[in-house]
Image 1 (tube, rainbow, N blue to C red):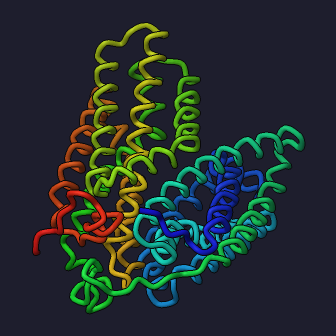
Image 2: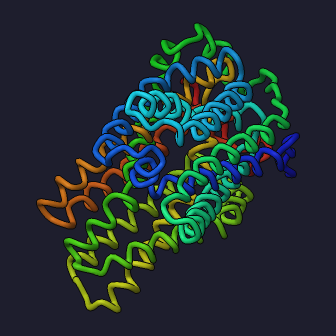
Length: 424
């Protein structure tokens, strides 16, 4: 069955790619970036970024409410505008109060952007088109961030640390251009039908609706378990290499390169294969979690055997490939599952709740991983294995309690062997 194309889809994806370039120009160098742009000390910059980042998390539920009231596209454009203005002002924010003010406003927009972007996918696409956009978005974000990191490296090579100022203005331009491109997409309205969320799930509107939706809360909890695994590559992996395996730090760069290249190069292809197989989103997301678990078990085995450097390199890269495949299988299906399980009238609030699972996992990961690693280098991988297996089991158990339109990318009648969910 052919997939409906989204009006303005190319502009949407191009805008996402351009904004990812902007993100890649500063995220890998955050502390150094803002230190040179503002002239403030690393300590002050770190303190401000931490405080404003936490404030951004608190703001996420309000962003969900704004999406439900004004529409995801309008809020998306506002956030692009705020980010563009924030980076344009950073070079002029040399005092602590000025930097804190600009950083706060920009952090509110940054932290809420994932909620709004997910809501926008739900607003402009239906059915399997949501899965396709999820996969394309992730591929473009990886490619864009990699390109942004390379670009800023070239800028710094030409102009030294003074190039950070030009980078800030480049970010502002990237976000402004992305906003102009995204303005060309056209939202669609899903007709109410037997596969929709249904009036009973849409009233009363508000966060009380989310808190009473036990299947969706279960989906959010399952995603928290998987999200811990997403944090492993950036937080746990480098520490594990340097402490437990005593491997060279260059392996971390190699692992990130493999992960980014696979996400950008074959992410859309793998997601397309999964989609065309007719697999239920719950099952393909569970498969992704199982691949995560397999990669984590591989780390335990490697940490037990501790072979020579060459064998360690080969094993680590193989583990990263399995890990990345899990990411590529889980991410589009899990994202589309959350978007489609959210009733249209309160989609913003639902996705704000769901995105908190990622934010909470990201916040907890450093302390959790370092504490476990101090006991035994294999312990954090064991905990992650149990978490991934728990997520896979939860997804399978939730399948019959979630709306059929969420579980299936296409209506069950169009998917051979698909069954309608059991009555709640």
